[in-house]
Amino acid sequence: MVDVFLVITIVVALFILLVVGVYFIINFQHPDDKNDAYFPKLVVLLGFVLAGCCVLALPLDVANNAGYAGCGGWDTKFCGGLNMV
Image 1 (cartoon, rainbow, N blue to C red):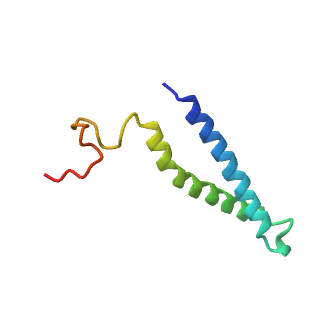
Image 2 (tube, rainbow, N blue to C red; image 1 turned 90 degrees about the vertical axis):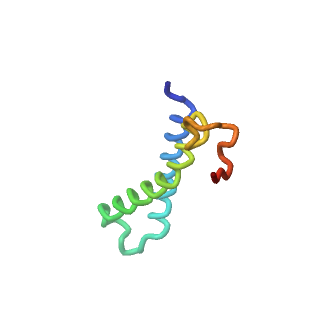
């Protein structure tokens, strides 16, 4: 079943990443590149968004799991601890 909260969170995070990426590109652009060089700016924006998505993928994976990562089939009483046998 799809978790509506996670879908809304993904859409909002993607929108925030796009807005921040566009802000960085506009704020740090050279004055000579004011109205040209759109393709390199689009590539940089795509890089910013992909880097942000990679950073946010781990918390999304943890939130999407039903339990702790790597605890399937083991004794969950000691799961998450340091079990060296």
